[in-house]
Image (cartoon, rainbow, N blue to C red; front, side, top):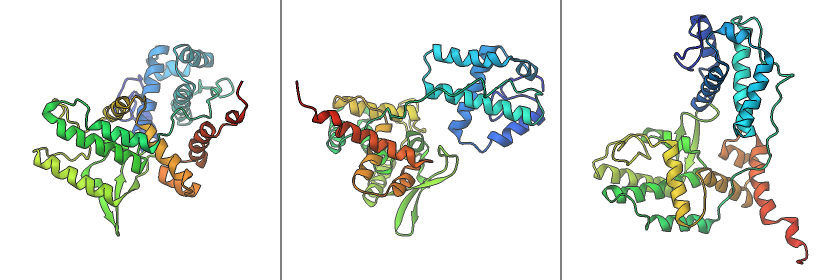
Length: 318
């Protein structure tokens, strides 16, 4: 092992073949976004601490790790982001230490504690009439005239898909036509790359499936042959995969059109909250949302309930 120069997946890991192999075995089956987070955490720390070899890492004073955590706080990072970065570094150091590539683990859990994270969700649920207003506004947004019809159709369907399936933007971005299959009398979407790292499936309502088929026909009539369900329609990236950032921008634009500031996650939050409000069992909604913990699902619901039925609403006016 000679340095920490970026090499194969996951990137920014030691060049030594044995160590590289050990890290690949540990991180190779992680979800893409998780691997990217580990890569980014190591790269940022490597740059800050001026690390060039595993010897540098081994000789690192544990207090330097604590200093780095403080550096992240002072730079304005949120508590959840700090915890994510430090957790990644902790795992990388532990793997290298347990496999014998460094004799001393510089990450001391007794010194480096997690930041407290608010238990409140930072995303709200929308009302059905707001969703309808966004669909109506979509018909009047000034899109690029060269692909105006396709943009209106795609963004309308994108909003419906995200709402009806509670999909994450990364999942919508990666969805291709081969992922949509029949399962008995139902239509499903196979999510090959998910947050959990395990392939999952989403049910597609019949009316949504029919709209998807019409959309695919429109793409073909326009001469756009693409494997992606929601392709980019930009002039330089026409037909390519639509990025998660672009999906978020499309939904944000629909929200702006009716005077609300939202992100893609609001649609997921809305679907989950409404399902619980309509009496669907918690375990069923948890499975539908693909949450690892039911506590996350419940938090979505309770946050909204606290806003709509807050005890302070009953206090006498002054």
